[in-house]
Length: 290
Image (cartoon, rainbow, N blue to C red):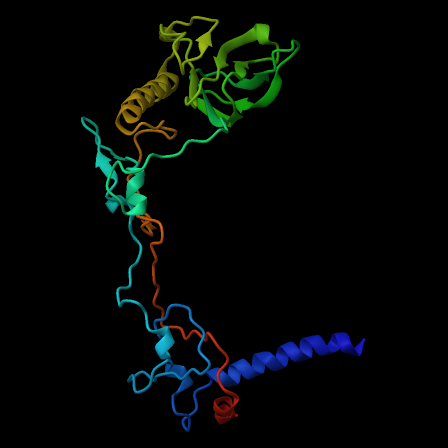
């Protein structure tokens, strides 16, 4: 039992040792309260001394001198150079750069590699006020496999593959489906809109029931109009960027900061006012804090 009691005792002793190391001592060469970390590349030094706030000594050894003194930092995401103004729309969209840029090579010198895996995301939008179920139809007969509930003027998503069949309905019986979806390659967004005349186009589910838009009033008509506006924006976004729009337009511009990732091998250095020990100081220096 005593060997287990020794473990917390040893931990307490180590904490006390670290506390002693960080306590200010007037007779030490550098006040531990004023230690300043050095810029470094992460190397390990056999000895480590620190500077006081006046910089009389240094916390870094020659092996820790950085390759350059430039210290980058996160930048507002809205300043990403690949965010470009879309024509006719108050929106900046991210346009993927030429893959050669990531290798710091001339544009067009490389071609982006593809992949054999053809799995993709599927987003299914319910553009009716009804609460419907999303089902996967295996094609083997019988009821559909429940995937999730989609409230009125809401959406649900799942992983899928081209050729998969889904339907929205109030029951799991495919015969009672309101809309049917056949997943197409590189198309992730599907929507059930029985109020539209274009019921059979790609990315718009085939609606088995035609509804009159005059049935929608008040908030339902407002929500339908917002979804329709979002779908119109989605077409412009895909034409401009080559990618699908998976969010809801309009939306606020990016607010957070990002670390640029412009090319392979790019590094960022972070400065801090906290002391970082990358190696245990020599014992003869530790004794001065006893």
